[in-house]
Structure formats: C-alpha cells, structure tokens
Length: 323
Ligand code: FAD
Image 1 (cartoon, rainbow, N blue to C red):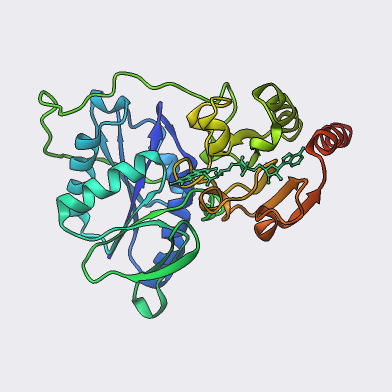
Image 2: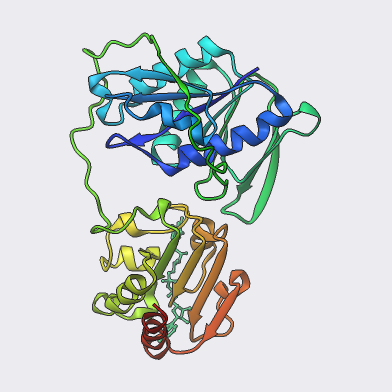
C-alpha cells in the first residue's frame, strides 16, 4: 500500500513542507511498505521528476491553468482523485496555510478523519498513530485512525526531509480529476507578501520576535537589526499586532502563525499560553526579558534576564563581529 504526499507549491516553487512530508513518508514506508507517491496541483509540472531525490517514486500531476494560485475546491477534487487512484494507507500534507485549508476539504470529500498539526507519526506494528498538540499546546494527544486512508497534516519544520539521493528521479504521470473550472465558488484575486523580502515566517530557520516590552513600534528596529545579523525573519506577539505596531502576518501564536524554527529569539515577550502555542515546538528558544518570573523562561533553552534596550544591541553587535 502506498503513502500519498501532497506536494505543495507556491508561485511554481515546491515548498519545504513538501520535502519534509516526503521525508516522513519515506521513513514510514520502511515499516508500512509501499511506494511514496506525490500529488501536485499547479499550472506546470516542471521539475517534479527531481522530487525523486526527496523520496517520491511517482508524482501525479494535476495540471490546470487555474492552479497557478491556490484553488481550494479544484485542488481538493484533484487530491481526492489521486487518493481514489492509488488507494493509499496514509495521506499527508504540510500544516501550512494551504494544507490547513486543503486537507479538511479532502477529508470531507472522502468521508474520513483528519489529524491536524501533527508533531510525530508512528507506525509501530503496522498500526498508524499520530501525536498532536491540543489545548493551545498545554497537552499532547495521541490519535489512531479507524478509517482508511489515514489523513494527517504535519507541523512545518518539525519533520526532517530525507537526505537527498542525487540523480534519483520520480516518474511523473498526468492526473485526471473531475472539476468544473467555469463555476468557482470563490476566486483568489491576489496575494500580498507581508514580510518585506524576508523568508516567510513558517519557512524560516531563524525567527526574532518582538513584544510589548519594546514600548513602541519605532523600537522594532532593534529586532530588525538583530534579525538581519542572524539572517532571520521578524515575528511579533499579538499585543503588538493589536496595537498596530506590526502587520497581522507577523503574528506568532494561537491566532497567528505556528512556527518551529531552529532558533526562536523572543524579545520583550511575556510568554502567554497563546503565544507559546505558536512557537514552543521551536528547536532552540532564547528569551530576553527583564522579568525573571516571565513564563517565557519556562520554555526557553537560554534566557537573558535584562533590559532589552541594552541586551539586544550588544547581542547584535557580537553577532555582526562573529560574521
Ligand atoms: P506582555 O504580556 O505585555 O509582555 C511584555 C513583556 O516584556 C513582559 O514580560 C515584560 O517583563 C517585558 N519587558 C518590558 N520591558 C522590558 C525591557 N525593557 N526589557 C526586557 N523585557 C521587558 N498572543 C500572541 O502572542 N499570539 C497569539 O496568537 C495570541 N492569541 C490569543 C488568542 C486569544 C483567544 C487570547 C485571549 C489571547 C491571545 N494572545 C495571543 C494574547 C496573549 O494572551 C498575550 O496578551 C500576548 O501574547 C502578550 O504579548 P506580549 O508578551 O508582547 O506583551
């Protein structure tokens, strides 16, 4: 039995969540057996064969001119058709903004359950289970899948891509799918990048986030300078987004983005449970806060108790010197 992986693209570029999902599928295939098959929705199938290096044996290509941008109903029809065609044991998506919209649509079309935002999958004894955070990250639950195919979205940056197998290519096959493009229920007319040339928050390896401790929007230059020194993306707490200091696209947390970078630096952020829900799975957390009792220190790997207006410029300077 196969494992089907949704190959996410944006602006024609394969996103890193797709490689992470392929890596996890390859790891699970060692226990569950069966080939790893990708399904791609886009306006072109260029470059899909190279996904063989990331673990795909075959990629089903749902090509349509309307698929240059995300098209929820059309993409869902295509992925559901791929499921019917290959009868996989498991279907996985990245828990990106596209995956979070697409996976429930596909699950509803097929009448199966969905484990969302998983941080691990297990196939011990051939039985699939998933671990996922619940209650804003206060607890984890383990779920089993009574119906087939099992369906899950994977939290970005938690799963490792497979080591690339140079020169290995995937076969690419066109996928037929039932969808009437002339009767869309909703049309995406445009998208706006909000991060000013920096990588998208959910794709970033390093994030420097600022909170209300910065006292005002003008002081975010301190966060931006540290982010530039580290090659990082800038994030924010909801308090500063609500205050209009930063755009909503920068917000990390329960009602913002979920991120799992290698390094997360929290500057002047208290660490409310709703903020932790969006970043506590980061691999290394550094907190800078003048209050030694701030809850952020409970999840931090490294903490600096001090005034950010002194600590951040000194840290930025030290990192610049290192580079
Ligand atoms: P504060 O809590 O005010 O913390 C500021 C911190 O800065 C303090 O710890 C203080 O000690 C420190 N500080 C002050 N001055 C300095 C200095 N000079 N040097 C060093 N440190 C200093 N929040 C999110 O972030 N994301 C979400 O998605 C989110 N969703 C929510 C959803 C719901 C339903 C609700 C009810 C709340 C949500 N919140 C969310 C809000 C959350 O509860 C907190 O209010 C918010 O995270 C606080 O932001 P903050 O840490 O920047 O501000």
